Image (cartoon, rainbow, N blue to C red; front, side, top):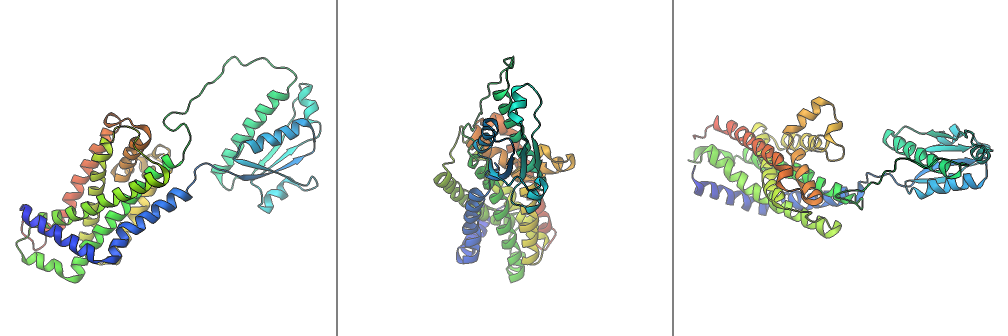
Length: 370
């Protein structure tokens, strides 16, 4: 392999990239927009969910119970008419749960009797329903213990402490994950389009007729797109720092090693897709739609991989974004360094190797000589 021919091919790709404004927008404008939308719009913690309350007791206990619900910040207690059915309130769709506090509740608690409180939860959204149930259970237990006539002190007390992200800042979880999703989508898309355009324009025929080898052709394209991908990574991480204050939590070495590997994996995947397809439309469908869905759903971006069915857990090991997300979240949240994520770096290296071979083989079988 001649480095000079690789370098010439790289310069050619960069010149073509600079002249194409649409590709420039695809490389930088869209990723930045995606980062801002995902980072500002996605929220994992539920907030301000309305729950209807029918208070038949009208006692200090019931008022304290309702105030406790409001204090949770996740739920908003809305006083509902007493003459309406609790199920009718749910059917109207204005509240996600209805709570009925029957008359005599405070007297029953003070006398040491069981005082049932009814809660109907709309489980159309299963995640929200489970959260509402947990909040109402905790609120009921606290209120019951506060207003009970007498109770033995607890023998076990839990003192918990949140580690790594004590403030519960969602941006520290979401934004590093968005870095991985962006680098999984756009470098792949750019590489696939760059490869297919050479076929559609016929410029690849010139490469066939020249002394350029298949490995040099792939290496030149990869080097140019690797530089573009790294510039893209630098841009989105700079915005992440400026907007959300996402900064290194410890040793940055895993990120400095993992980012070029991640970009290499996705660029080589795009070259592989471009080598196997013949139109820009099919390349965009494969590199944009399919790859982006896989990278979001199987990477652990929003939900842990361990909660997926076993087949998809195993399948996720070949998804580069799954490994890179662990690296970014370690670098910006945990700060464990190489001892914590060295296996992810090894996995990205292996994936990059196999993708490089896969991108080279289709061209090796064509008119180029190697």
